[in-house]
Image (cartoon, rainbow, N blue to C red; front, side, top):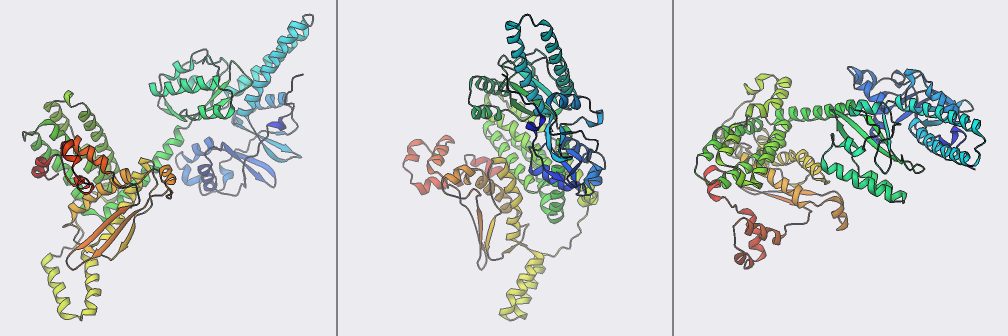
Length: 607
């Protein structure tokens, strides 16, 4: 006897509930913290009042005026009140027909379940479809057995087939109106004809009976196709459920198809042979656009704050870009140096400028320089394929205006075009400042001089501690890119005030120190845990003020410098021969990091 699920109660699961008086921001925060959640139920006095599906919610708040209208107001403005409710005792067939015959405005994944007229949970249409598919397979098997054993029961067999066809029609209707793409395939990777019409809209073609990997080849690269092929082959061969989940978990969760961002999910259906994997496709294009806009807004705010407080550095960084592209680079191409040295120098300058622009929050320009850096890196890997004319054409093709356009637009839109035309600051010459400091020394007693001098310096000079703090955001961005965890810079020691213009080249050079700490010094979280360290790396800065100078100490709690690696690099760059490096002690090998393999270029162009 075949065991079947007779009532819908066995598919009921609990999802979080919220009061209709809570505001939309509460729902947004919940969805952000629970990425796997498909939706929530709104309950008023233990009775369901509506539902909020993730996709519908983000579509509404992502619409024009939607964010301001719904995020701070009660969620009854955005919830679906026309909901389908069935009792927990409802049988599977009745549930299927109820779900199939819903109004067009009620086509969503959740059906609310009641017990004694009170909220008892929900049933997901997606999960119901899986159970219906399992049931269908069992009934087909039962039908075939009856056909072989009870040939005389032709009329009963016809009636049974009619019932199955009705169930198929119900499932097909549900698939076509669920607002998502559903398709099935087995170990032959052929897509079943029982798929939702949403798939045709997503892929732009009819996918029924086609090889799944052939369909995907138009939308993902060869590496992804190979990954899918291996994952599915292992899944159909492996019987262990846990390993099956691992194989499917390595597949991409998001794919760009025909200009739309599609979230993908794979579910195993153990009871089926020919259709053992169901793929669910959800269009998240609008949600993705909202996320990208939010990130863009945050970056723009950082840029505005940065340009207000560091106008001089921003302008200097922009001038440096123009100076290199329009002056230094062309002179370098005409200098007569060999192509390899010129290419290395241009790469190094572009790499440095990328860090400068990123530090100053000009993110669009930094991204453009990153693309130039990638192109230069590709040239360095195949120098034989690049001629001097190719390099000259590349440099002449760099458009500073185009690189800066988006960031300049953000600045001028917020601060006006006068930002680059006027300087609303008062200038005091160094001579005048020196006279004031001497006057303090001759006028005030010694115990008061330090206090007044510090106050004067705070007006005219910049605290080194504040300069170091500016690197916090830069380090956090690098850490995220490198898959690491690094906290704020720990700054200790005395307050040291400096003339920022005088030390500007030194301040710029620190970007390389912090980048190397984040990239090469601090280990990955797993590696740190294995070494008995906390997951979060720490960078420290110590300041000591002397009579006419100061000492700045930068350290990290990473793995340190490997002399063997430094030695190999020195030989590779031609700084030492293998025989020479073998005779150097550890200290001298470590000093090699302060040397350059391109001394003539550094001397001539100040790299």
